[in-house]
Image 1 (cartoon, helix red, strand yellow):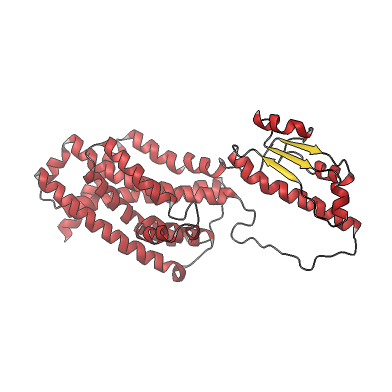
Image 2: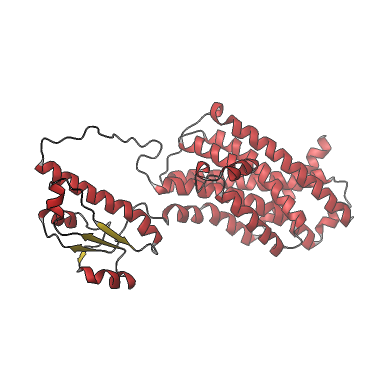
Length: 375
């Protein structure tokens, strides 16, 4: 037993030394957990910024003037007043993202309780501005109309008032979500790539034959790659959470980093096993890259890190329960965002242990088969 552990340790150290000589891979690792995390957290605007808007005011009343005055920088550019016939040409040329059309007699109909409609034209080719700005415009218009009505009907009160309390992200900052999710995505990506690339690098350089003539078992060779590459990813990911996410981006980590690291270790066990399995299937680095693409995209997009799992088809939800990323994203969000303890996330820990063990045995069987054909 001691001899086997010594072999696994020294083989792992060999993998670390080999990785240390691969400057391009080191740059990829550092960028993934620093620059990529920062860019992912800040590239999506938290709010609308300088969106071009035009307004057709056919009412020319105090209420319409009040609505026009509510659109100002930095959310919007200063509104451009246009005639109705200029709406379509302006949007066709891409001059405006939004065109608000206030109909005639709008104020009179509002005060009479007729609930008139205002038309909002949106250029949906500008996806980010259109999606965010649509809600902004609706909120501004309804807020100004409600305030105007209250001023003219002082005795009118709403039957109920909604008090909103934002938990876990009170400012609705996309930086909080984007930074942590990018760290999680990078953990999955690099754990698969590093182990798969390490195996293919052995084959391309011919060093795998050297290992075969030594008194080593496939289990020892594979476990050495798992612990060494997993250790690298775990250390860099933890440093990224502390230095980049917490210190640089100012994102609060509510739960225990130690508990999260334990869940990350189980996820790395599963993901590195997947990487070795892909490394035994691929015959070259280009093939490995293609396999990683078709494997990684579903793992990241359907795990709940981008879209809540509840909004997905039930079949997809059930299938993705077999993926380690689903449970890792669940426990990471619970621990880092909501401060959950082990009593809450233990089902995800158990699922990761079972999935990791299954992937490890499958990868080991495939690895043994591959080595037997080379011997």
